[in-house]
Image (cartoon, rainbow, N blue to C red; front, side, top):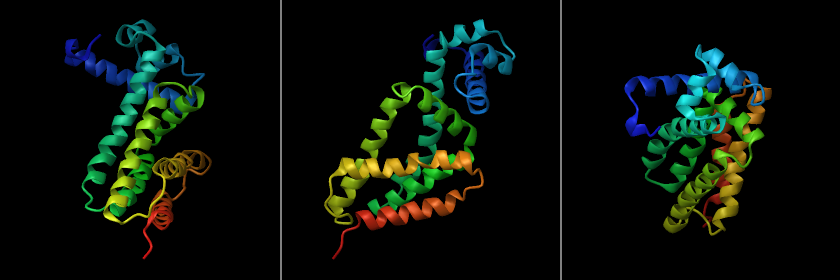
Length: 196
Protein backbone atom coordinates (compact mmCIF):
# COMPACT_ATOMS: atom_id res chain seq x y z
CA UNK A 1 0.00 0.00 0.00
CA UNK A 2 1.59 3.32 -1.09
CA UNK A 3 2.08 5.89 1.65
CA UNK A 4 -0.01 8.49 -0.22
CA UNK A 5 -3.00 6.15 -0.11
CA UNK A 6 -2.89 5.45 3.63
CA UNK A 7 -5.19 7.05 6.17
CA UNK A 8 -4.06 8.48 9.49
CA UNK A 9 -5.38 5.34 11.21
CA UNK A 10 -3.41 3.08 8.87
CA UNK A 11 -0.23 5.09 9.46
CA UNK A 12 -0.79 4.82 13.22
CA UNK A 13 -1.29 1.05 12.95
CA UNK A 14 1.90 0.69 10.86
CA UNK A 15 3.83 2.72 13.48
CA UNK A 16 2.44 0.47 16.24
CA UNK A 17 3.52 -2.67 14.35
CA UNK A 18 7.00 -1.25 13.73
CA UNK A 19 7.36 -0.39 17.44
CA UNK A 20 6.25 -3.90 18.45
CA UNK A 21 8.64 -5.43 15.92
CA UNK A 22 11.50 -3.40 17.38
CA UNK A 23 10.57 -4.60 20.87
CA UNK A 24 10.34 -8.21 19.69
CA UNK A 25 13.70 -8.07 17.91
CA UNK A 26 15.41 -6.37 20.86
CA UNK A 27 14.01 -8.71 23.51
CA UNK A 28 13.45 -12.03 21.72
CA UNK A 29 16.07 -11.89 18.97
CA UNK A 30 15.70 -12.12 15.21
CA UNK A 31 14.88 -15.84 15.00
CA UNK A 32 12.26 -15.74 17.75
CA UNK A 33 10.57 -12.53 16.52
CA UNK A 34 7.96 -14.31 14.43
CA UNK A 35 4.95 -12.62 12.90
CA UNK A 36 2.82 -14.39 15.51
CA UNK A 37 4.91 -13.02 18.41
CA UNK A 38 4.92 -9.52 16.92
CA UNK A 39 1.13 -9.71 16.45
CA UNK A 40 0.76 -10.86 20.05
CA UNK A 41 2.78 -7.84 21.28
CA UNK A 42 0.69 -5.51 19.10
CA UNK A 43 -2.54 -7.26 20.17
CA UNK A 44 -3.54 -7.80 16.55
CA UNK A 45 -3.72 -10.76 14.18
CA UNK A 46 -0.74 -11.81 12.03
CA UNK A 47 -2.99 -11.20 9.03
CA UNK A 48 -3.20 -7.52 9.91
CA UNK A 49 0.61 -7.30 9.81
CA UNK A 50 0.54 -8.92 6.37
CA UNK A 51 -2.13 -6.45 5.27
CA UNK A 52 0.07 -3.49 6.21
CA UNK A 53 3.48 -4.87 5.24
CA UNK A 54 2.96 -7.86 2.97
CA UNK A 55 5.35 -10.09 4.91
CA UNK A 56 8.29 -10.20 7.28
CA UNK A 57 10.82 -8.96 4.70
CA UNK A 58 8.81 -5.80 4.08
CA UNK A 59 8.32 -5.35 7.81
CA UNK A 60 12.06 -5.66 8.45
CA UNK A 61 12.69 -3.12 5.66
CA UNK A 62 10.28 -0.73 7.40
CA UNK A 63 12.01 -1.25 10.75
CA UNK A 64 15.42 -0.49 9.23
CA UNK A 65 14.03 2.64 7.53
CA UNK A 66 12.48 3.76 10.83
CA UNK A 67 15.66 3.24 12.89
CA UNK A 68 17.84 4.91 10.24
CA UNK A 69 15.45 7.89 10.23
CA UNK A 70 15.67 8.13 14.03
CA UNK A 71 19.46 8.23 13.75
CA UNK A 72 19.68 10.66 10.84
CA UNK A 73 17.09 13.02 12.34
CA UNK A 74 19.26 13.23 15.46
CA UNK A 75 22.65 13.36 13.76
CA UNK A 76 22.46 15.15 10.41
CA UNK A 77 21.21 18.60 11.51
CA UNK A 78 23.87 18.80 14.22
CA UNK A 79 26.67 17.65 11.91
CA UNK A 80 25.60 20.07 9.18
CA UNK A 81 25.48 22.94 11.70
CA UNK A 82 29.25 22.72 12.23
CA UNK A 83 31.48 25.31 10.58
CA UNK A 84 34.60 23.15 10.39
CA UNK A 85 35.20 19.59 9.24
CA UNK A 86 37.01 18.86 12.53
CA UNK A 87 33.92 19.84 14.50
CA UNK A 88 31.68 17.89 12.12
CA UNK A 89 33.78 14.77 12.68
CA UNK A 90 33.64 15.25 16.48
CA UNK A 91 29.86 15.72 16.36
CA UNK A 92 29.59 12.62 14.15
CA UNK A 93 30.96 10.52 17.02
CA UNK A 94 28.98 12.37 19.70
CA UNK A 95 25.64 12.01 17.91
CA UNK A 96 26.20 8.39 16.90
CA UNK A 97 26.81 7.37 20.48
CA UNK A 98 24.03 9.64 21.76
CA UNK A 99 21.66 7.78 19.44
CA UNK A 100 22.89 4.50 20.96
CA UNK A 101 22.35 5.87 24.47
CA UNK A 102 18.82 7.22 24.01
CA UNK A 103 17.48 4.70 21.48
CA UNK A 104 18.75 1.47 23.01
CA UNK A 105 15.86 -0.77 21.91
CA UNK A 106 15.91 0.35 18.24
CA UNK A 107 19.70 -0.07 18.27
CA UNK A 108 19.41 -3.65 19.58
CA UNK A 109 16.76 -4.42 16.97
CA UNK A 110 19.05 -3.11 14.22
CA UNK A 111 21.95 -5.19 15.55
CA UNK A 112 19.73 -8.28 15.38
CA UNK A 113 18.77 -7.50 11.80
CA UNK A 114 22.37 -6.87 10.72
CA UNK A 115 23.63 -10.00 12.47
CA UNK A 116 21.07 -12.29 10.85
CA UNK A 117 20.65 -10.67 7.45
CA UNK A 118 24.01 -9.24 6.34
CA UNK A 119 22.86 -8.67 2.76
CA UNK A 120 19.53 -7.24 3.82
CA UNK A 121 18.12 -3.73 3.92
CA UNK A 122 20.92 -2.28 6.07
CA UNK A 123 23.70 -3.21 3.61
CA UNK A 124 22.86 -0.29 1.30
CA UNK A 125 22.69 2.06 4.29
CA UNK A 126 26.23 1.08 5.28
CA UNK A 127 27.56 2.30 1.93
CA UNK A 128 25.63 5.55 2.33
CA UNK A 129 27.17 6.00 5.79
CA UNK A 130 30.69 5.55 4.39
CA UNK A 131 29.99 8.05 1.60
CA UNK A 132 28.72 10.60 4.14
CA UNK A 133 31.89 10.21 6.22
CA UNK A 134 33.99 10.61 3.09
CA UNK A 135 32.28 13.95 2.42
CA UNK A 136 33.33 15.26 5.84
CA UNK A 137 36.87 13.96 5.31
CA UNK A 138 37.10 15.52 1.83
CA UNK A 139 35.84 18.81 3.27
CA UNK A 140 38.61 18.73 5.88
CA UNK A 141 41.23 17.94 3.27
CA UNK A 142 39.97 20.77 1.08
CA UNK A 143 40.21 23.30 3.94
CA UNK A 144 43.60 21.97 5.04
CA UNK A 145 42.32 20.80 8.44
CA UNK A 146 42.99 17.16 7.53
CA UNK A 147 46.11 15.60 6.09
CA UNK A 148 46.16 13.85 2.75
CA UNK A 149 44.93 10.26 3.09
CA UNK A 150 42.72 7.93 1.01
CA UNK A 151 39.12 8.67 1.95
CA UNK A 152 37.53 5.21 1.83
CA UNK A 153 40.01 3.44 4.15
CA UNK A 154 39.71 6.24 6.73
CA UNK A 155 35.92 6.21 6.43
CA UNK A 156 35.94 2.42 6.97
CA UNK A 157 38.13 2.85 10.07
CA UNK A 158 35.79 5.52 11.48
CA UNK A 159 32.65 3.50 10.74
CA UNK A 160 34.30 0.37 12.14
CA UNK A 161 35.01 2.14 15.42
CA UNK A 162 31.37 3.22 15.71
CA UNK A 163 30.04 -0.20 14.68
CA UNK A 164 32.14 -1.87 17.39
CA UNK A 165 30.28 -0.01 20.14
CA UNK A 166 26.95 -1.94 20.18
CA UNK A 167 28.73 -5.25 20.90
CA UNK A 168 30.43 -3.72 23.93
CA UNK A 169 27.19 -2.06 24.99
CA UNK A 170 25.46 -5.45 24.99
CA UNK A 171 28.10 -6.83 27.34
CA UNK A 172 28.24 -3.69 29.50
CA UNK A 173 24.95 -1.74 29.51
CA UNK A 174 26.58 0.84 31.82
CA UNK A 175 29.30 1.67 29.29
CA UNK A 176 30.00 5.42 29.45
CA UNK A 177 29.09 6.42 25.90
CA UNK A 178 29.88 10.11 26.41
CA UNK A 179 33.46 9.36 27.44
CA UNK A 180 33.79 6.82 24.64
CA UNK A 181 32.53 9.37 22.08
CA UNK A 182 35.09 11.90 23.32
CA UNK A 183 37.90 9.33 23.06
CA UNK A 184 36.87 8.28 19.56
CA UNK A 185 36.71 11.93 18.49
CA UNK A 186 40.18 12.56 19.93
CA UNK A 187 41.64 9.43 18.33
CA UNK A 188 40.36 10.30 14.87
CA UNK A 189 41.20 13.96 15.28
CA UNK A 190 44.80 12.91 15.81
CA UNK A 191 44.60 10.42 12.93
CA UNK A 192 43.20 12.91 10.42
CA UNK A 193 44.65 16.28 11.36
CA UNK A 194 47.10 18.09 9.19
CA UNK A 195 50.50 18.53 10.81
CA UNK A 196 52.47 21.78 10.35
